[in-house]
Structures are given as structure tokens and as C-alpha cells.
Amino acid sequence: MARLRRAKDEEKALIYRWWKGIFAEDDGGHSDYYFEHYYQSKQSYVLVDEKDELISSCQVHTKTLMFNQKPLQVSLIVGVFTLPKYRKQGYMKELLDKVIEILEYRDTLTLIQAYVPHLYEPYGFKQIYVRNLFWLDVLSLPTVSPLGITYNVSALELRDLYRQFTQHFTGYCVRNEQDFNLLLGELTAMSGKLVAYQEDGKLLAYAFVYPHGDHLEIDEMVYLNSKALVAILGSLKSTNLPIRLAVSEKEDLRRLFPHADLERQAYTSVRAN
Image (cartoon, rainbow, N blue to C red; front, side, top):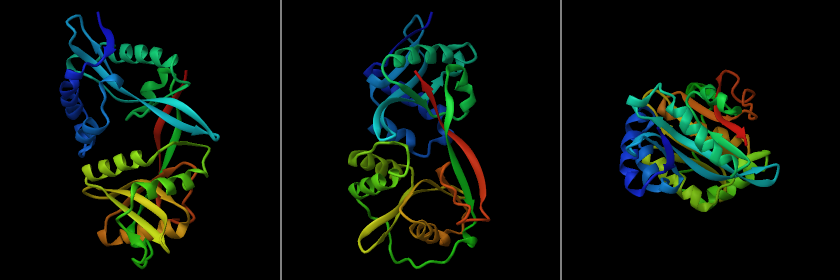
């Protein structure tokens, strides 16, 4: 009979090996960085058999979400996996049922990021955060002056710009300077780069850019005006690669990029405990 417990410190290497293998297709250096800087045994749950051997696992992070100008502590479930020999035996359901039961008494909301969001609907999760994905042909972008483009911005400057940008939204994750130091480290670990734009010494936009074989991915774009946004995109024109720009569902950039292809991506699901 399976039981749930917190991971032991000495199990970190084992969980890392399975995580690295199971999520290899979407790794790109993320796993190594995650286990060095984010992983903690106290937030790692494992389902084990009668011999205390690993069956399934997941990580639960505690985040602060600003919702309608009020801070709200939420749980974020990531890295759910089951060992191959135990799959299709109901163990993932058992893991999630038991973890959710714990979180029900701790936080108002539980969030989950998953490759296949509908798999988690039976657990009460609803898709509330959908992103707009704009595919941009760089040839259609205007040629802009490199003046103002910079690649060297401090975590403190990023934090201050992020705070200005998120004031336009009713819900967002609260970040501090240390959060941005970690994000910059993760960006480097995944062979990405920061591209930013400033005027008169004031930071107006930044983007996290990740290279892929056939396109560039901008996973986060923060900007105070459209000029700054276009300046960053224009600076990537020399790569001659299509750009996949991810923004929130409320950011309709079709007036700026009328010829861009638009996709919708279910990004985060939430459960009201």
C-alpha cells in the first residue's frame, strides 16, 4: 500500500535523476539550475511503496499572488511524475489527492502548471491563465536604431520595472530583487539572454529571450510603451529567425503586428480550496 511523505534530504539525487530523464525534452539546462537553487526537501512530496521506495513525486512552492491589490498566499505544484514501472496504476491520482488534501488546509488557492491541463480538471483545477502567443516574422519588423538597447541590467532595475508594469493587472506574482537574481541565473543556465531598452537612463522594457533551433522564444516581455517593445523586437531582426512572443491574454498586440499568427496557450490552472 502506498503512502505519502516529505522527501528525505538524501533522496534529492534520486529525484533529480528521474526529473532529468522524464523532463529531458523540455530541459535546456533548467533541471540542473532548479535542483541547485530552488529544490528543497521540505517542499518535495513523494509517494512510496511498502519498502519505502519512490513511486511518484511532485514539488510544492509557496508564492505570494497580488489579487485586486491584496496579497494572497498560494501553492504552486510543479514537476509531477511517476516512475515508468508504476504508471497507469492510479498512483499519480493518489499522490495528487493526498497532496491537495494537505494544501486545502493551508492555502486558499492551489496552482499547477502542466503540459496537458485537462488531465487535472478532475481534481478541481480550472484553466484561468491563458497566454497569447504571437508568431512574428522578423522581416515584417521595422528596422530600428540600436540606440537604447542594453544587455546589462541589474535585478533591482528589473524589479522596479516589473512593479510598474504589473500595476496594470488585477493579478500577478509578487517578486523581489532576489527573485530576479534567480531568474537571471536561470536565463543564463538555459542559454538565454536578457535584452532591454532604456531612454535617458530609465529602463522602459526587458525581454527574456531563449534560442531554439528554428526560432527565438520570448517567454517574458515587460514594457511601459509600444515603442520600447518594438525596439527590443527590432534588435533581434539580425537573427533571421521567427519570434514566438508570449504575453498575457489581455495584451492584444494585433494592432502592432497585424500579420502575426496568434495562438492561445493554457498556461496555469487553479483550484479553489
